[in-house]
Image (cartoon, rainbow, N blue to C red; front, side):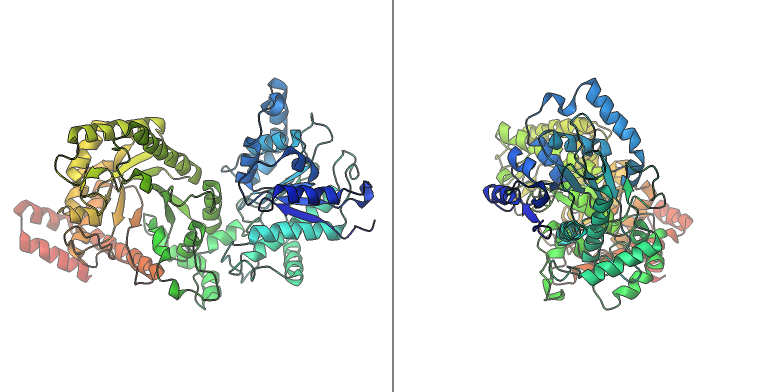
Length: 635
């Protein structure tokens, strides 16, 4: 027909009335051979998609979180989850598609994806193409009858060719969808009711479209910026020639008798960003940086990463918000980082970095990304989530767990428990609770025992609600928001932990906070012992009420050395997190300095003579102690 070279793309950032008009126009002529396929990007504004639009688009293209949101937005039907028959059908589909599940890996549940697809297709959705970030993309073809499960086509990751590295995922999802639309147009779309005899479209043609789309999405991550990263046709075709020559296309159609992709890993990045698992491992934790030697670094990265991390028993994390500092150091032709995703990408350049600590809810605004999308980004970058840290919003300025209004206290507790939900999605095992607002400013302002009891009850509820999460309180003696905190010292914090009396309740100690409280950090670490769940490393001048957030060991090197000694002595099992405030310093290089500094102190402690340490401690020998420190730091 005359419209063979046309198609329509709509999305959730366009008013629904306009999307409906586009879909109606695409089908206006009524002749199936002249119909224009309509693709709908489910990203953008968070709103309910009408069932009318759902029925009119040919390809609905959500990511995993958008799929879940769309499915949840519709009232339940009796057969959405079904009775025994529906459960058996889903179970049968699950067993037939176990090879896809193996490629998706344990972090994604194919059964959950199928249930969401089922809900949408029961309401009229046609083909559902789900982009799965670091796990590829999955196309669920509309079944010929509602009783039959959809046929699935899975596109795993396409590994990048030698010399290319993942730099920026901005716009990669858009490139994937545009690539799919271009390929659909050029390969000649089949009409509904045509194809391979089961009511679906030509699966072979759609497999080619998915591979083309994955190539476009993969190449997009190798350049910075949304527009500059859009690949040319020549680049996509050259990349596909290399992929096919290497035998790495890896598409799996559950309608095929044979699986052609047995050798393909389930841990690459395809759509919206594509990097293979082997290449992911080759990128140093934190990526390759921005300098002119990036390509050289990438090729040598396996050895570099080993030098940075393999011989050290702890992961390193650093304050994510420090990535807002010194934007003048970045390429002026690129958009400066302004979202949590941008901060993670910049922080990923830190050599030796192994994990990211997130603030909740600060780093998880619906307009930025979901926890699932954050997890996909971490997977792509070869990083882990270290902990989720509470940052109560300003509406809790009169107190969070200590708010005088019971309804506000309840809201704070529920927010705290939601942080644990996020931690579980991210794969983190710890939630760190620091409230800028739980305390008082003047004598007689609060009932001290009442505030204490409120904290005990709130933490017990959180611990019991999430027994697999390690909850830790981060105390602070004073702050501009709260002059006296309800828990102002390590001793008071340990009393609280003892009264809470839960095995998954402990402490996170911040070096700067301990110094502000007039404590020797090493002594506090020794007191806490196996209840120390987290440690935040920094330094400071300890001026009154000042939290300097300086580089570790830069001001109190002897205290830093002894802190490392006590962490080793108590058998600390967490990760090292740098809570520093570079501001006028390159935050990437500052974190790299901190990592080197910690390793130097740790190795110095390992070389200290235990018998000499015992003799000094037994005799309270001050000069002997200073000599030990001098000798250790001189090595």
